[in-house]
Length: 342
Image 1: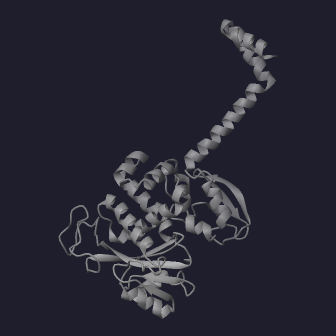
Image 2 (image 1 turned 180 degrees about the vertical axis):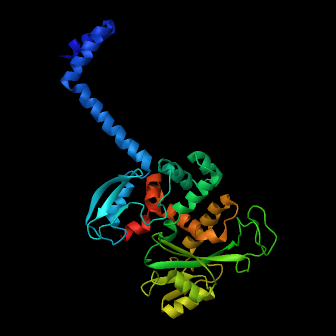
Image 3 (image 1 turned 60 degrees about the vertical axis):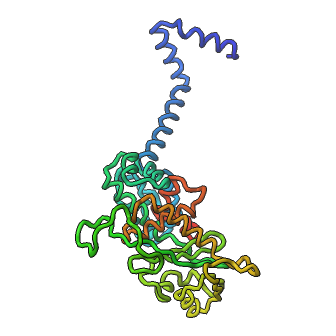
């Protein structure tokens, strides 16, 4: 049938009686066109429905292909049906079954169809109350999801830093946010403000080490001393690096013990005109972005501070690839730094 004949036929559909319409539909189905189209639509809808239901999409398959069996790290894996809206797998090496969430902080979380919405809210840095409203869950559920989503990113750090490494401490006011009793001081409202900046008993020290490619390593220091710094960055910063700092005694002591070349800048850390590439501008800029981003939370409980450091570190590491799908991928153990070292 040419295009002219088709248009004439299509224009006559409106004149068909009910009996004629039924006869025409039966003839089309007999030709297989509608059946094939309906089957195709059904398969597509089923696939989209599964992805909406489990909240993982292809992320689960990527995780399993990348890491293998979570029990024995075996690679001899076969599909093993579905359970609780998640694809399951069986390892032929150890004989155990698992899914993409097994042995991750995301295991056993429900309402997976709302995870992508919650991930988008986290990328935007919204409050718990607003994230709960957008995801259609209770406030306590949104808070629990936030820290489950941050369990893996908090541990996702580069194994090594390259070339020139800038290192410096910054300080955040200690917070007992969430505690209802047993405080050794009167409670503060909406985060409060430190009485003194820098090294002070009310302030928590955060070490940030960052190379010129943007790879960032950070840690909450229990004490500002060489031993704590060594625990935080030992192995990631080695003799192959050149360490630049502003003269902090703890960082200098760590570098001396580890026999790492260190460049000490005079306060306030401005570069020497004779060596313009020796500076700590990158790490200081990161400090500024971190604190500016954290102001929206009106104080972060000190016990949760490593999770928030991982949150900010993951956002910067993902960059333009910071999508809800990639955020879920990071939450199940394949963050930006973990992908580089898998």
